[in-house]
Length: 161
Image (cartoon, rainbow, N blue to C red; front, side, top):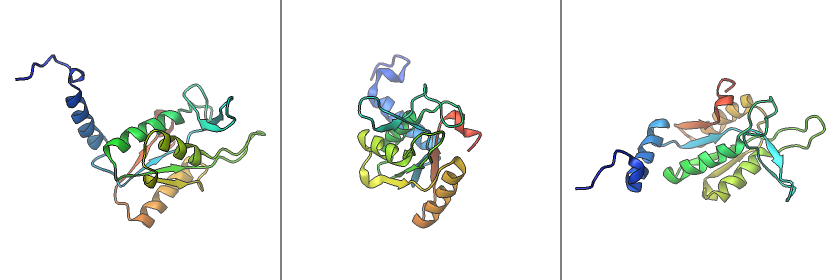
């Protein structure tokens, strides 16, 4: 009989087993699609390319950005939901003299970097706000006959969503 120490962390197999069950519970089953809502992007000072903001970078509303966390969370879900589509959305128009931010491309690139199968990444660059992202969720769900979609965001965007 296996000795139990009181923590599932002591047994990696139990941790993985519980993660799968927890994600299925959080998502109310296995979703057809996960919509990763856009945050904001910042230019990498070394490469000059856009990358998702972290929690130290405010979004256009002055709230915590955290787009990088969304990409990481989506990639984690992809490990447990290998047939689920992951929708990378939004393009922020130029504001205050800044460049257009291709959030959908940035998120898709990060999802791919974190191991999400490129065939499961769907780009939806047409959206530019939380409202248009949610409208896109409806549009893509109807077009693709998705019956069960999940929206992935962070706490600062939940109320607006």
